[in-house]
Length: 186
Image (cartoon, rainbow, N blue to C red; front, side, top):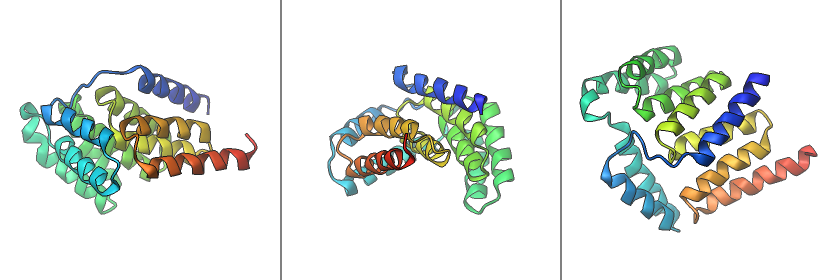
């Protein structure tokens, strides 16, 4: 548990001070994140997020030969072949360590397996490479909630709210987590 607390503390520090827009360098992303910040329409927010995901899904030009390996990992995760997914994501991470989405997908796979410490480490790396990664922040919140660390989950959700300040679903989630804090007597 001590390791878990250290990872959480380091991760929150990375999230709160990291302003680098690394890894995902396509100019379209800046415009999409601006639109995400401005939108107050949930359908539009979802469409913008999907456009961002489509950019995140593509490996950088220099690593395009790994796209099929990454695709196999995604497919393996989708059909529940988690160990194969980890193997494929490991291959991509080893060859293209600055590709944030491989770290994020492996974090998701570890989460599915209940390997939260490994998931947290991969989320940390994802957020170092792409601090705006709303998927990683959502995963972080879920891990904290699963481990009854509701205040930390709220902090992750507040980071999401900075990316999407008009997203009422995030506001509702924060309220639900605050209710859990009250119920748990913390």
